[in-house]
Length: 95
Length: 409
Image (cartoon, rainbow over all chains, first blue to last red; front, side, top):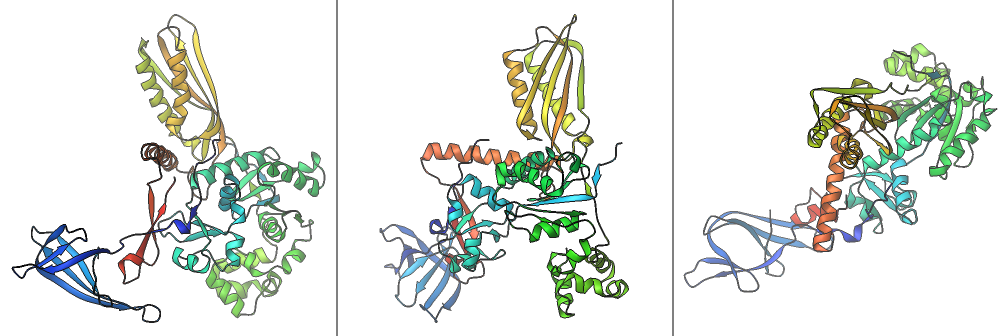
């Protein structure tokens, strides 16, 4: 029998899924909220905030405090962003 | 229909953590690391855990997240049920060399009927030595063997044995042997086990000391069977399987056929028909023969012996099609006959071979995945296939819920 080419899977080769991606959230000249990427490209202009919620967790080790917003962008796309309330930075993530 | 051969004297051959042992056999050096096999179902929990991993606190049924938390060096392995079934089928074939009466119970556990073998090998120890020599060719380091009257006594003996020392229960000594054994050797669920312990029953002897009627009134028919096993009143014989008679599928052409494509198409039909034959259920085909009656007399014959017996139509057809291509019949064919003439047993635990369609589908699916993965690796020069596993599916933080792990089918 031909030996299998499979190799054992190692836990140090685990890759996280749905890691938050850094974004910028700014108000443009007309006062509308715009989501952009760190390299300057625009993700979209926000038409409406559909939902908001907050997660406070893991206070017993490294506190996590996030304010999530589900946004409707111009063109109809929906995204979820959150602001890290400890650093003030914004991230995009699938819910 | 012929009766299944049985044997009241049984040797139990048990390879604990059989699937994990299969992986260790094909990955050199793996045994030196704490290792765990993922469950073959969709739960993505741990199924089998090596002793090194157990020392670190890892247990079967844990989630990957829990296991990694306890043992960061843990090596996770995707299960390969088709491979384990093949290995176990090979083990059964090897045991068939010692005795014609072999019964598979689950992966890694089989019973060998030893009635009459004393005339060939001698006393039970010699029979066990013969079994060890046969099994030792592949799994000698880990196999445990027990011998006694009936399957249950043999199983308990095997579970008490050591890798290098079999346990033999002399005839007539079953009750005495069983009396000191813990109740965990009985085939009982956790609820009954807990209730028996609450009643202060720790050994089979303690269970057998209670009147049968009292146990039956507490636990019903299950309790009655457990009591009878504990008291040595049941000695279930090993039930072997009879290799099926050859299966023949034939096609007579209205007008003799010379086109190879039509012959290949007919061959596919014949293989499909023969595979569906009820006599073949539970068996894989080890040897086939394709013959043709040629117009005006004469015949053509292609025998083929499979190194790895199979129940998959494509694998059965491949060597016959090659022969049809390279050395076809010398004239137009009037009748094409396909014969399955030798068989190898399948296994029951995963029921891969008990249900033909499932067996073929699963094995075919695995091969298709392997082939696709090979092609991707050739194109992108690295492994880019991943499996999603649950890490903390309940987490409020989305990035904690799932992770990707390299996938090599």
